[in-house]
Image (tube, rainbow, N blue to C red; front, side, top):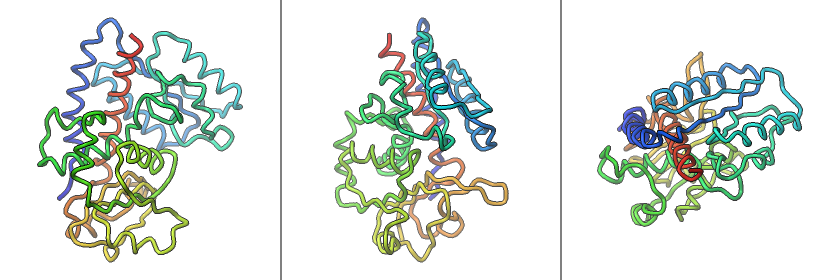
Length: 287
């Protein structure tokens, strides 16, 4: 069964929009840093801009077409940090090599770092929350209602109960995919096996998995690797013949998997909604 991430995101977006309306005197403002002219990255920030508009959130894109040095970039971030009107700051990944370091997030205070990249964080990674939302949707009767919005303080017991005897495999450990997803699985006390490019015979883990979460950006799953009824959740992105695809071919696995997410239209739209949910929560905290 295909999981319609767009449908889920539309409903959750309406819940976030209601919260935004309550913040009349403290309307959230997101600043997004984009470095360079990569078409994929420009497309992603445009999606974030469009969703912000629908939710009634202010959006400020700082597009640096030429790559600055690290100090100059850090100073630009500090300027936004010191702007009292700015509620949250994100840096569109991937960054050029000379700027690609976790320490860049140290320049963003916890209350404005809404992606959960810092070692000490207030807000959980949106992509991890999106994955948990899909799991919650599947195991709570495929109902789209207010209870679907993940609140870890309330939902830990639920996830622990439903996933107690499930074998979960997470594929990838990248900064924008596998790492934050793994981080939130750990925070939720969910046991999982992390497979990456150094893993020997990864297909052996796939064959016995009940849930496989992929976040690689290339095709890594073949039908022969899967057991019938497996749940496939994809957060990886690749381009083939000008079209976005995930880490498996949907037509190959749709008759094997009990549930699977499409690409695009799966994890991605839900991820963006949680980004703005974190922004709204940041606005409440700063108030």
